[in-house]
Image 1 (cartoon, one colour):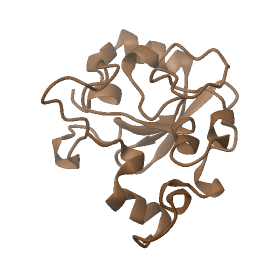
Image 2 (spheres, rainbow, N blue to C red; image 1 turned 90 degrees about the horizontal axis):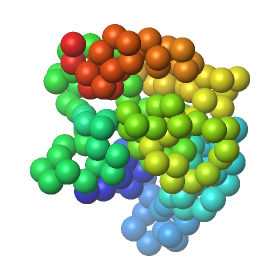
Image 3 (cartoon, one colour; image 1 turned 90 degrees about the vertical axis):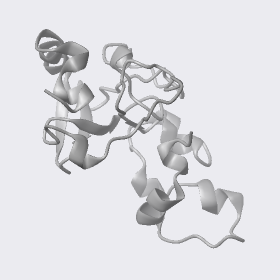
Amino acid sequence: MSQWYQNTEFLTYLKGSVSEDASWSVKHGFPAELLDPLAEASEGSGAGNIKGSYGALGSDPSDANWTTPGFETSYLTAQLVNPAQTAAYATALDWRVVYGGRLSWTVAEAPNGGGALAYRYGGSALVVLFDGYDEEVILEMITDIDDNGGIQHPFWKGAN
C-alpha cells in the first residue's frame, strides 16, 4: 500500500511533473506553501515534512494502522452517499486520520501522531470534504458526530 503523499499521479497535481533524474529531495519534498504553516512537524525533510501537516481519511477510519488484509483505504467519489459531509483530508499529526485520533489532540506537535486530528487553529481542525469544500471542525462538533452515529456517521464513513 502506498500512502497518499507518495502517490505520483496525485503529486503531479500538487507539484507538477518531476523528471526521473531529479534528486530525492525534489521528488519527495513539498513546497512550503503546501504545508500547514502552524505544524511544527512540517519542518522535517522529504515526505516527512507533509506527514505532520495533513492526514487523509479512508474508508475504514477504525483501522488505526490501515493494515487490514484486503482493505481499501480510499473511496471512489461515486461510492459516497454524502460527499458534502465526508472528510477527505484534515490538519493532522500523521499521514492519515483515524476515528480513534479524533479526541487525542494535546496541543503537542509530534510526527506520526497515531492518526490524530490537529486542532491547531484556535481549537479547530481544518477539514477538506470530498465535495471540495473546506470547514473548521471543533471538538464539540466531533462530540455531536459521536452522538449522531459515531464511526458510522457520514463524516467518517461516507454513508448514512
